[in-house]
Image (cartoon, rainbow, N blue to C red; front, side):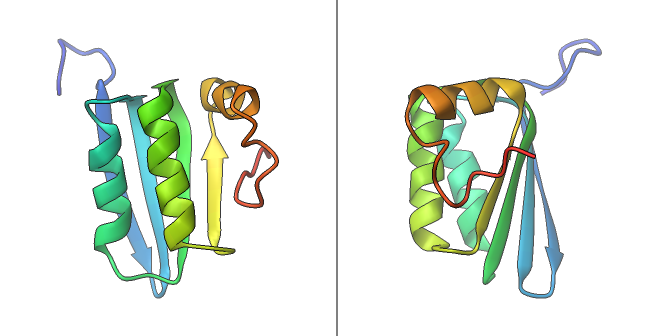
Length: 104
């Protein structure tokens, strides 16, 4: 969504490299957009997934639920790259210790 030159509220792009899927999400992931992020992550066949959330400015409980569902689909092969905001939400929710959380 273009808002007169400002950053999009939500956008997601997909890059496929063999069996590796990379989903790059920008903007806000909330109850209105979390399911879209989930569907985008699950629609392409892949063995490994990188969920790049480094450009996410807002992340709520619906977004957490979507990431947990994605982690169930990609056990041991998911990497979540968080923004500062996403990192904080995952830390507060107790999920920062999961093997898919990549704080680097």
